[in-house]
Image 1 (cartoon, helix red, strand yellow):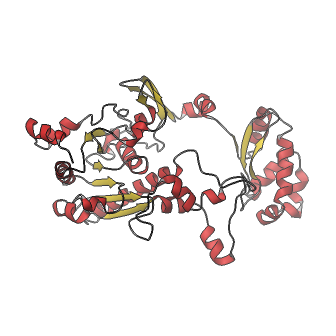
Image 2 (cartoon, one colour; image 1 turned 180 degrees about the vertical axis):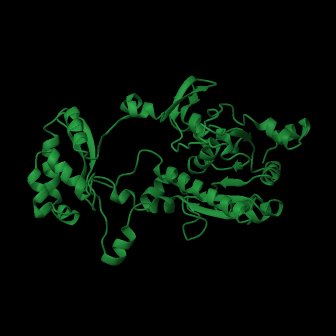
Image 3 (tube, one colour; image 1 turned 135 degrees about the vertical axis):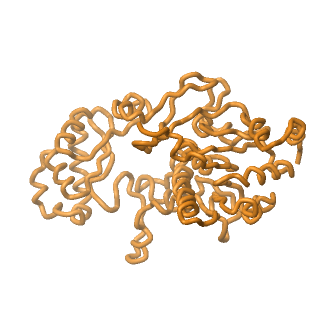
Length: 400
């Protein structure tokens, strides 16, 4: 596969002070491509993800993925000693990730101006629910709140039902992806253009808001407010989830004209191709109920295997609606190694989602699963800073 995968971000050093999902999601992706990530967690409580989700034999399963590939350092940031160690480590870092409420880093003496004295090239990314500025900056902020505030929940769900929140950390996950893009652009700006580091102010609500389609311009220019459409789309037809005769579901997205016409032929309605009511996207949208009813009726009259075979033969874009059991058994997932098996120090062979981006020369690699011991690498990290055994002992015993 070419060069060693760790050369992609070789020598990029990351200090992660963040908790929960958005910030650690950034450091996980960077670690997957070879960055040296030091993840700081509380000496007694550990990272919050350790107590999030299901456990097996007392072992937190989510942590195995969220904590992967990182060196763990346990420090109490409320103590002078802990703050002193962070300043010392930050002096040699490329990227620092934090997700505390605005003002907390300043309270600890870890503001960017202070850190940049010893490291002007440092890139600090600050993740909060609401951002570092604005009237809501001091409110508690989490992904669920951002999913509501961003407008996502308002447009999600059945038309006659309540707003719907996702059952997973969507806002945090989107923020992680935006955050990785942001820090890599800042690294490029620093290293290619010979500039200093900088601060990135990243909010969860704006990260999610940015992907919700052209609502702003449609409201600005037409006064339109997008509401809930269930699984249909307000901008194209046919697009929905449909139930087959054997109680399976398929998702179809065929709003472009060539795709819609292929679908009409697949369900034996060739005359619709030449009907002016369905001739273009705007007309199909205006007659969306009729189009959707025809597709619904045809699909509910046939079993899944027949629907898949017929639509595939006519090159209609569709996919089965999978649960995780079906995903684990699907040959396409297996062929692309979308799910990877790793050896874990506690659970033996375990599986998790693999790295999605597949590079031809420098593929990423999950070096190890999340370590169970809180602060697994604390002693080694502190010794690498030149601390002696007595200094380390004193630091670890320090109380706020």
